[in-house]
Image (cartoon, rainbow, N blue to C red; front, side):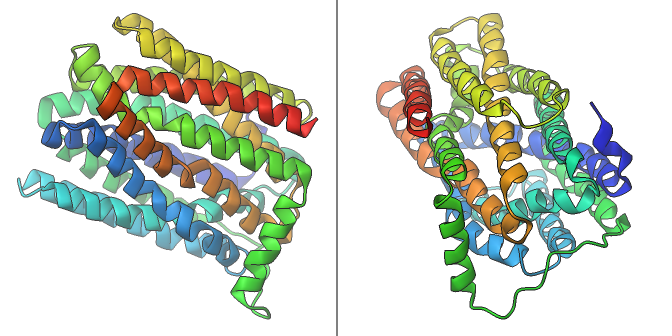
Length: 394
C-alpha cells in the first residue's frame, strides 16, 4: 500500500505535503467561516469560491505549457513560497484587527493565480519523483491519501482554534506549514527533468496539448466527467458554513466536524485506491463513485441532524475522492511524458477551473431557494451526468 515511499524524493514530498496540506485545510475552513461571519451572505461564500478558482480556468493551460518547458521542481519552490506569503499576510491582517472583505477578495485572487501555476506542475512532477513507472498509480493514490488525511485533521483543528482564538491563528499555522514542503523540494535530487521546449511558440504547444487530449476518446471522457462533477458537485463545500450555522444551529466547531467527516470518507477512499495494484477497472469505479457522490449530496440536503449529516458526508467524501483520484490515475497512466504538463493542466482546469462557475451557481441558488435546494440540484446533475458520459464512452 505504501510502496511509492521507497523512492527518497517522493518520501520527502509526501512528508512535506502532510504538514503543508494540514495547514491549507485549516485555512480553507477558517476563510469560509470568516467570510460568513463578516457578511452573513451565502452568495458571498459562492463569490469568494469563484474568485479563488477562476484563475485556474484562465491561466492553467498556459501553466501546463510552462510545466513542460522548465524545471517543475523550481516552479514549485516559487509557487509554494508565494502561497506562504499570502497566508502570512492574511494572518497579520486578522490578528491586527484590520481585515476587511476586500482584503480577502484580493488575496483570494492572488492565491488563485499562484495555484493555477502550482497545480499542473505538482501533478506532473510526481512522475519525476518516482523512478519506477509501475509505482506511479500508488504514488498518486498516496498523494490523495495525504490530501484527505489533511482534510480530516485540518478542519477539525481549525474549528477548535477558531472557537478559542479566532480565525487568524489558522492562517498563521498555514503560512508556517509551507516551510516543510519548501524544505522538502530543496532536499530532492531530481535527475529526470522536463525537456526544454523553447523552439516553438507557446500557442503552438497549447494547441498541440488540446488536440492531443480531445482527440483521445478516453482522455476526453475523463476530462468532461471531471469538469461536470467539479462544476455541479464540488461547490457544496462553499455552502458548508450555511448548513453548520443556520440549518444545524451550530458554530465553528460544527463546521469543523462536517468538513472532517468529508475528509474521513475521502481518507477511506484513498486507502481503497492505494491498496489497488493498477489502473485496470478504474473506469467502472469512476461511474459507481460518481453516483455515490451525487446521491450522497441529495441525502445530505435533507438532513437537519448533525450525526446524520456527518454520516452522509462520509459517503460524499469517499465518492468524491475516489472518482477524482481515479480520473487522475487513468490520465497519468496513458498520457505521453512530453505532454504530461499540458494534459494535467487541462485536468486541473476541469477539476478546479470549473468550480468557480459552480460556486456562483450554488451561491445564487442558495440565496434564492435555500442551501438545501441548491445541493439537491448539484447531486442530480452529478448522477445524470455520470450516466450520460458513461453511455458516450461505451
